[in-house]
Image 1 (cartoon, rainbow, N blue to C red):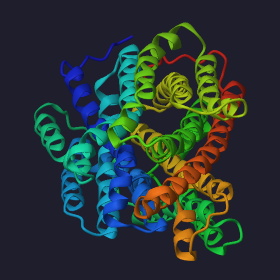
Image 2 (image 1 turned 180 degrees about the vertical axis):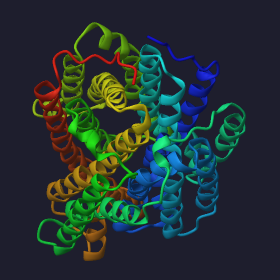
Image 3 (image 1 turned 180 degrees about the horizontal axis):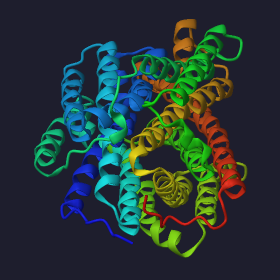
Length: 507
């Protein structure tokens, strides 16, 4: 059997792509820890606060399919470089923002840039690593950087915000983007897909974007306003129609934007599920824990970020071990076990709360267990998903994988975050405050902390203690729900993945 020639630049390429991915993944969560500073400065309303957090991931996930297909046709390296140009421009807009809508617009544009960058990282990686074992290791690094970046975002954000304010969370992007572009122009190979010739499918692009944005927006609105509001149901219906038309069109056209037939492979569809469901939980937990550290425990942004470190450190270690586990044991057992460990970490705070109070040590243990489980599960799922796709369909696989990461994280904040907000309001005791002040306190724990600071004195401390206690009681049920999702993914894994599947095929 002929062995493809290895690209001598492949490890340099991996370093450049890892740097690219680190920047994108950090931007998903870096604002979580800078958020109280931003809220105090710009005073966004509750709806604006959710949009500031969510719009980046929603814009990114809505455009990933189109971006993956565009990279196949236009050139993946070229699209990657263009994406960094957009990313740098959006970061500048954010740095000079003076209104909440400025930040929302900048975060949306960051999502556009991120969508151009992310599929290219996996597609280029898949093309330069032709050996199956080396590719598994490279994908493990990719998963470790992505997951670690999401968890390191609050730490880096805390370091910057502590001394330079929330604007610095965006300023960081500029020098990093400049270094990656300079290295990328020199070392990254250009590649295209042989399947990308032919007429560009504008209809499919429109259907994809409308369907994905309506899906994300509908679930977000449903979590916020409840089942009685007709708007989320209208958005979900629009999404169902648009995505159904999109899938039917992609099955029919000669050069599809997205190779939806990949989902007919059990290993591929289960791997996608094993990324999406846990990311719903992880996205929400990272958001809720950083808020709890600051509002519930009174930590500074830097202290809050540092206290998240057990998760990324454990995730990186587990990701590096995952490829060797995949060579020794059946994939279904490694992936399923990783998901069960992740679920145990997610459920631990709720379990402990039934018997004792919650302090940082309990969360540190939970974050460590979550990091170990997530590191194994996401790495194995990523390797399985990419290995299941033929080389000329890797952009479709990359777009699907990254949509699972980003849309899952955004939906976690929307659904589980909204669940926690509703529980927080229900847990608040009767407070002797005027109607406008009480409305602000009930709006969010961030607003309650800001109101307590304005009131000051004994009344302010009493209010902050009440809000803190209500928020602590509110977040652990959301953690438990996240754990249930991870268990569901584990059950799917053990049921559907073939017993003899190994990641050793070269396509």
